[in-house]
Image (tube, rainbow, N blue to C red; front, side, top):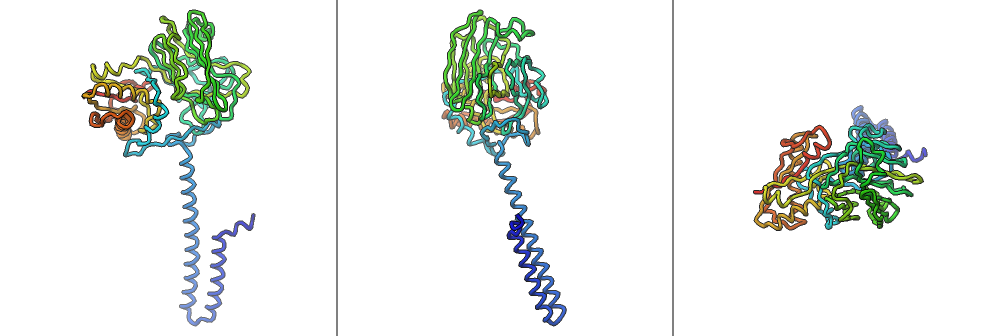
Length: 444
């Protein structure tokens, strides 16, 4: 090991010493103190130049290491988040501070058949921001065990479900006949769970007694069973205490080693229930729910004998109200959506926004004389000026997506952004902030 220390810098020092000895020998024969002083200054200058070169090399290497470390993190990931589980996700690039995200719509190709459109008003949102890392979330109930964690290369906080049982978000107490429910789900790449995770929409006789959820007369339950290649999903319904036949299918969206979170979206529209895993619609049941059913609870659960089970859920979002794009934009002159989603602090549009964009593009295509102003809005988090700039860039990104993906004439659309200046809800709760983050289409 000691021999390795004689790097190029070490040899440079030896050369300097040798040169100094030769110069010293020559100096003894030189006549005049001026010549000797000049030789000494030459040695000092050579030593200083070598030391400067060494410092420059060290500074360059540090800069290269820092750049490589930064490039290995997602662009919008929180700084220095501790890793709770090996659950890497694909990095997403932030857009330029001065131009819309030109590469954003490229991700839409996978979502070309995605027709999910979130409800108009967000009524519940859970990001676990109010909970301490390592604690079970305050607004949930369980008969098992779980904890709030962060995951390497994933944004935000996640609820880790690591014991068989049920997990109920008690703040969700109303799921009307037109409602959407979304969340993110993942398992570590190394997991091989023997039991699937079930998600149940249920009508409880008493919301204060959620332990009776398994005997409730009305419910819809779908499962997610990841595996190394293709996973399996199944669905069962229960109406007036009578269970319907179960059905199951395989899907590549649940491959446990794909190193990504799965975005789950559920859409109840009267008696119809649709379930999406990422861009794939895995279930579409036209008579899944009784006409008079009033769901008032959501339950996550998995049974005993699970083996290597380790489930994570995050970003729960419940929104109510069926989209009415055509009537509100053409007749009322204004349509507001929370269904166009962006990466954090970025104008890059997320793929699951495709259904909403397709909805408004359809209205514009059917009404060729209709012109609109697209206005972006943000919540109050962060700097006012930055939010104003972000809202303008997001509106411009929406216009660009409508042009490039749906061939809408750019001349029919102008854009603007108002930042955080026109809130429609309180900026003190996650749901209120989600309602303030919106895009408006205003008839011109």
